[in-house]
Length: 200
Image 1 (cartoon, rainbow, N blue to C red):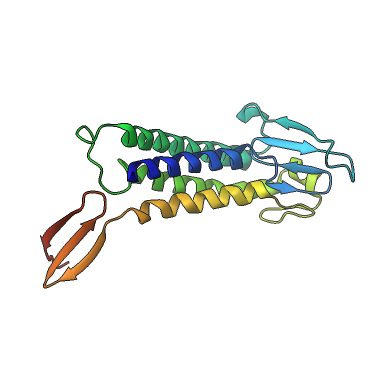
Image 2 (spheres, rainbow, N blue to C red; image 1 turned 180 degrees about the vertical axis):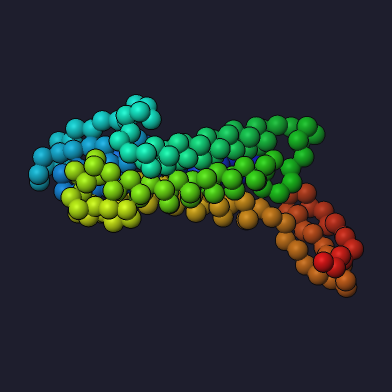
């Protein structure tokens, strides 16, 4: 049961991160919006008639900081997707083959994905100083959107990075001190492990 929950969380987190990555609504003005990999424009007052495009390669992306951010964010998403596949395999594998402890086979992969994604999220607003962003947002500069506002795509990307950083902490075993010993309680294995106390 716990393995299935972690697999579902890992898969949904990878999907949410992918949605944020391909969203054209990271920064938006009245007639234009853009994200890491996509952009859309529409006539004034008619946002239902959108024309969208994608940056098909890193060469098509208009700014160096934007390219760096795209590469970092894509790497973070690949780590999340790899972690989701590992969690799915861990949940579906027989118990004899893969004992279930903690929150998955490699919680460090998810923590690394969160760290990489956060770095990419911090690098992306530097691209607001690019000519492309200035054309869309007016007087934009580094970490200043000009006429553009934050869109839902950037918020989703931030939310997925925060969730990816907190989920590995949820699965850590609970620790209690009793009579000079540390007792580890693991809900997955229903066992108590006594360890002598060590001074640091």
